[in-house]
Picture 1 (cartoon, rainbow, N blue to C red):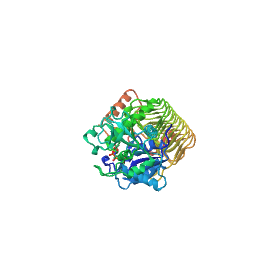
Picture 2: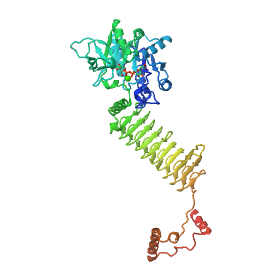
Picture 3: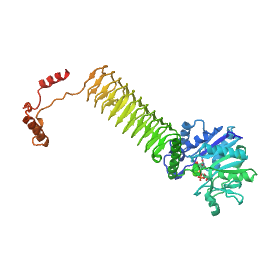
Picture 4: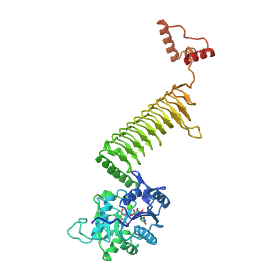
Length: 520
Ligand code: UD1
Ligand code: CA
C-alpha cells in the first residue's frame, strides 16, 4: 500500500529563538547552504506534496511572513500571538484551518521550523509507517549520543527488548525539564516531528494542559492523551540521528551547516564531480554541477550557480548565481550573476558583477572587473581593466589597464567595441562611445569620440624630451651621475654630439615639427 498524500503539513516557527541572541533576525531566518532554516524545512515538506502547508509564525512575524511569501507563496501563515507552547501553536493552526472550513482529516504532519537537515525521504517514511500501523499519532524519534535538552520517548513495557528495537509500545514523551533521573538516561529522543490522524488531532489538542515545568501546552502530551483515549501511538526512529538536529544557538547552526554541506558535497562527488577539498568547499542546495566538473579548494558556490562538465572552479572562488559553461576555468575570482562561456577563462583576482557574459573562449584576466558587459567570442581583457556597461565584439583585445568610463557622475552610459578591435594599453573609453570594427586605439588615449571602423585613434599628449635637463637641474644626484656616465661612454664610443641643449626645452617650433614627423 503506497502512502496517501498528507492532508497538511504544519511547520512551527513562532518561537523567538532566544539562544541565537540576535537583535535583528528571528531564529528561523538564520541561513545555511543558501536557505533559511525554515526554508529548508518548508522545501522538504513541500516535496511531500501535502494538500495544505501551514506555517505558524509569531516572533518576527513580519519578516518571516515576507520571507515565506517569496519562498513559497502557496504556504498559508497563521499567527500565534503568544508562544504558549508547541501544542498551543498546532492548536492555533488547526483552529485557523477549521475556521476556513479546511480542517484536515487525513494525515497531518507537524515539523519544527528549526530542523534544517530533515529530508523528504524521512518524512515520507514516517507517513508510510503511520498509515500502515493505523496510528493516531506517530512520532519520529532518534537514538542520540547526548539526549540532553530533548524530550525522551518513554516506552511502556520493560520487556526484553531495548527501546527502539520495535515492539515496545510508546507510553508518551517527557520533556527534559520534567524528566526523572531514570527518564533522563533514555537516549531515544523526540525529534519534534509527528504524523497525526487529522480527525483525532483537534480533540487531542483540546485536552492539553499547562501543568508542567514550563507552564506551556506541550504538543508532546498529545501522545498520552490519545493513548489514554484508547488509540494507537507509535514511534519510528530516524536512520541517522544527525538529521533531526534542532538549531537553538549559533554553535548548532554551524554544526548543521557543516553536516548539510558534507551531505551536498558528497552527493555531487558521487554524481561525478571532482571536489579536491570537501572541507573547504561550500555548495548551496540550489547549485548544480555536472559530472566531470572540478571544484578546487576554498571555493563557495552560492545560489543558483551552475558548473558544467569539464569546467574547473577554484581555488579561492566565490560564485553566486553564476553559470560556468563547459571547459571554462575560473581561478581566484568573485563572480555574481555572471555567465562564463565554454572554454572561457577568468582570473586570478577577477571580479565579475551582474550582467557579465563571456562568450566562448573569452578571457577576463588578472585584476579585471566587469559589470553588465558582453564580451564576444575569443575576445580578451587580460590585465588590470574595468569593463562596465559594454558590448565587445569577437576577437578583440583590450590592452592592459583600460578603463571603460561608464559613469559621468549622474548616469551610466554604454560603450560598444567592434569585432577584432585593438584597444591600446591604458586607454579610457569615455561612454557613450563606439569603437568600430577592426579599429585601433593608441596606448594612453582618452577616447571621447566614436572611432570609425579600421581607424587608428590617437588622443593623448605628445612626448617631448628635454635633453640634459637632469644634469642641469638635478646636478650631483645619482640620476645626473648615471646620465653623465652614459653620455661619456657614448662619446667615448664616438656617438653623436647633439646632447645637451642650452635652453630649458625645445621651442614651440621644434615641438610642432616633431609632431608633424609623427603624423607621417
Ligand atoms: C521540542 C519538544 C521536544 C523535542 C524538541 C526537538 C515540546 C514540548 N518539546 O522542544 O520534546 O525533543 O522540540 O527539537 O514540543 N514553537 C512555536 N510556538 C510556541 C513554542 C514553540 O511555534 O509556542 C516552535 C518554535 O519556533 C520551534 C519549535 O516550535 O520551531 C520547537 O520549539 P522549541 O522551543 O525549540 O522546543 P524544544 O524545547 O526544543
Ligand atoms: Ca528546539
